[in-house]
Length: 54
Image (cartoon, rainbow, N blue to C red; front, side):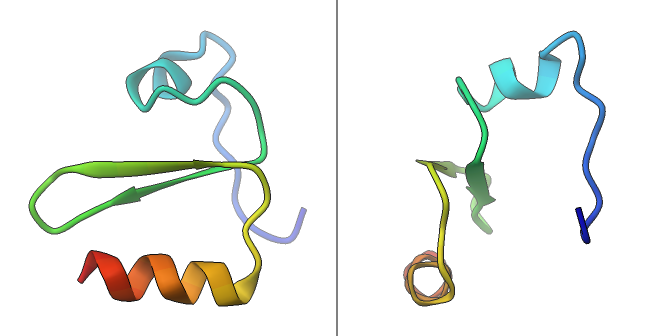
């Protein structure tokens, strides 16, 4: 992997953000709400998610 990963062996973070498997992406918005995307995210989808979250 070329980016940092967390060690979530007890699944505390996965549970907090309702992530059942990897790959997954959780966006934490400015208002504190979250959006979880299950599965791989390409650059186009990531750009869309970020622009909608601002």
